[in-house]
Length: 104
Length: 520
Image: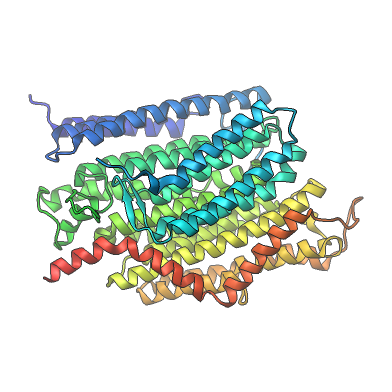
């Protein structure tokens, strides 16, 4: 079996859906972040697959895009974990269902 | 490739300034008064805004095909710098009383402003994404800046989780759009004349007008295009807080330090809409019919839900959050109206959108500055707390009343004129039902704005603290300027409207060229 564009896209869509589900269903803030990471990696896979199979002559820009997404995702985790840590220090919980001071 | 760095000098200056403020506050810790950094930042922002307006207005160029430096960019550069200026001015006393680490505070405000300026200028999706993340990350930290306050923590945690989620949604949409069009550049108006493959050029194939036909088959890739558009719209919906993606907004607004709430509701929204408008008019206009229905539903739901939820709020910050959500609904009507029969009509929609955006932002900053001045004195932010404000501080009460009337869309104020033009465009571009919902929703909104005004004017002051108080001079001056602007816009919007018309015209250059070549 030859692995073509469709297979990569299907895998990307599957990963994205999994990440989507995790991000929406997890109660733990770190779990939500992990779901988001999975979604971002699905994006990377899709972009790389498109650039590999593209007829366009500027595929390099897509690969640069992916590198930037990886870098930004790392920064996102840094900011996210810092905020989660602060919440944990003040509240002793990172369960997003229990941080409900603000509502209405 | 020769890069014309002189085109993006304001961005360089702003980045340097932000670094200097952060580093300076660290180096001179304890030796310089904390307020100094606030006044220095505000002064630098004002000077930069004026210089940018003077030196760049006539530029119509392009930086390496990723940043457009045209009238639209310059208008928004000056607009964002102005927003940051007024925010910093309003924040100085608040930060002195209630926050630590002023250097980082003002530095992050500057970095967020840099993100906004790049976002308004970006005409390439990677650049836009990076600018959006610079803006969002600065805001995540700023919302949680009061790190000993659990409300502030919680607001920023929710904002960060949903923000990261929405970025991922938008990125997946971007990857699909790339797959369909093979490009991340919005449109190919290239001053150097080299033919670059662009999203707009490729999408023109779908309508059969122009564009090169290296695309496989429009029907085969249509699902990808549609899902991509929906995901990008959903991601942007999170950023501008359109219903049903608005859940983070009231929490982040209530948790954030008040000046940041003001900045978020003014600058954050304005930047997201600058991006929204440029992307949808420059890149996605050829397939407007594919996304208009989706944005139209968003706009309608946002106007209705935002106004209805605002009715039951008891906290001023939350009330302003829902009020800003409903304003997003009116602004989205402008995006929907881009889907018109002629390009001229689309241009009208873009101009109306920007005009309403500027009117809304000016009013909102005025209202928030007044709330901050009130909060500095009392430390309270519930609606019942403003009871009898007209006796304690008539000027603030007047400003709040004027601002809220303007947000409700009463004649005399900016809100009326600008909203009127938005709905007029919606009507003439064939979105009667959307305009009708908007007008009805505006009437509903009058009720909750009047609730606040009633508390201020019809009740006696209550509680232990009912003495009159003074507003600091710089803040009073800023408020007076903004309110004067709101009245001026309401009575005579023509000069600003002409400027905006000139700036938004550039967005439709490729669309005009494509349709001209199709006629030929």
